[in-house]
Length: 351
Figure 1 (cartoon, rainbow, N blue to C red):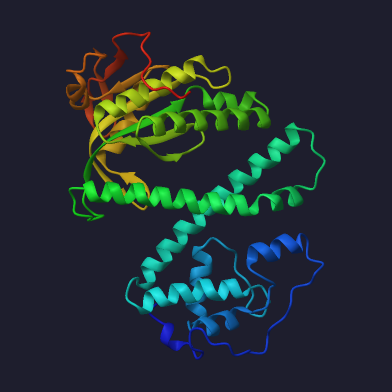
Figure 2: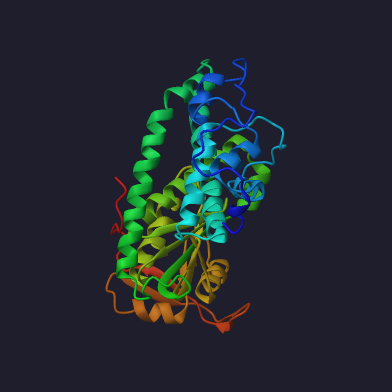
């Protein structure tokens, strides 16, 4: 980090600084919390910074980047695991592997991703307990699965990293994150979602959204694509080529059409140059796919003429020109409906 030299205690020091305190055994869920936190709360922020060999300012910046609220400097809130994590980051910076801005970016990615992951997993477990009529203490139940959940997290992280490294090895941009690459982008949007938010009880709306995201994510994964993000009533996904994207889009539409919980979707699909940055995608192609979604009728998939041209020779697909429309930011454009030549054929199996 740029100001690690301001610290007065070297990294890895074992000296006691005078503020070591053991957390109260009466703290709610103290046993599981101590396990998760890596021990009792023993240190104030200045202690953590000095033990890790970094300034208090840098320690505070990293803490915020991880998504945690400010902690008073005189509050005993940190454990030995906090010291170790900060020291690991400092070591990466001092070795020149990272600089401070990159360390902040990586911390923010971890914080935001794991915040959603933990919320999602916890809510799913609690909803399952409620559906089963369980009267068990939810903290005690979650405590039973901590090791399994942690093991799965590490496993999935490694598999996802392996998949990313494979993509990088095939990437023609030579690993340059600022270089655009050719991708197919799709937006799947729930029909009448705004009305549903007013008409459905919150519990039913939650089930609907979870069902939509789950089905769409399964289809994208099975079709070899990637879910970039989900935003309530919308799923943004990418595929390597127009055919893979079209098959994913059609299968999403078909599954929603026969589902008893989720309403129809409309899907917009476009292929072209896309900038990938920090897990998201940007550029004209992404904007075009979004605009096309608004032009699709419920239960249909539409694309632009350039993407349609790349699909025209595929015997299993039919492209139907629609009326010419004015598209904001793109001018007049004639969208094309993508349909299957054989409506009884199954494109992606989820069973």
